[in-house]
Length: 205
Ligand SMILES: Cc1cc2nc3c(=O)[nH]c(=O)nc-3n(C[C@H](O)[C@H](O)[C@H](O)COP(=O)(O)O)c2cc1C
Image (tube, rainbow, N blue to C red; front, side, top):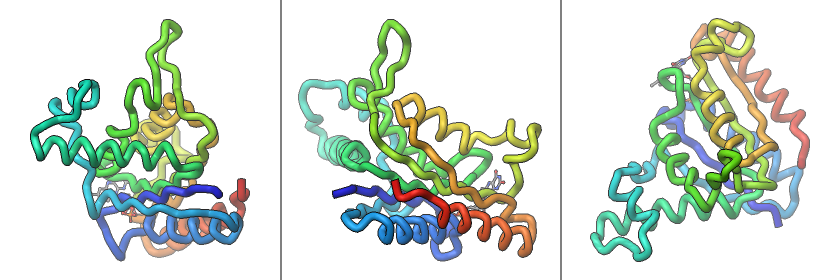
């Protein structure tokens, strides 16, 4: 069985382009991989708990927290990490918001970057502990960044995701991109068509 975790983070609901594209991408993979089991996580609908100081400390403590609210956050965070660790393929809908990713997606990632679980500090530096996963990010953005060196310096969305998951040890990492979607209907349709071509061309494994 192949486990896929489908994560959406757009705050735009029905109007979201990344949600549309992640759904199409997951459908394509369902067709390609007969034994695919899909879990769905909408971090905009149910926001991950904020990584507070108390929650951060609870992570490293020997016993689970006694305070009921903190305990609930601790359990939610633990579940998010387990769900990530148990997936073989992770499809992430990651729109660019304010040159970065949605707050809720960042909140999700805060529960995945956990020493001893997904990375380790070693004498040689950071060592990623996440091996054998495939991550496919659907990146949507209003402007154009990829082809322009000056603009791509402003990209803290794809760059952040690449850096973060790369440091966790993920090497099979791909972007499906629709950019310039805010630059008029023609550019938006062209961007969606390009993303759909990339989805169709994705290898099954
Ligand atoms: C709150 C917000 C912030 C945005 N910030 C940027 C930005 O910094 N740069 C950009 O190129 N587009 C920006 N956009 C445009 C989105 O990237 C674009 O609408 C994209 O389709 C969002 O993906 P979604 O439709 O799945 O939400 C922003 C949109 C929203 C709603």
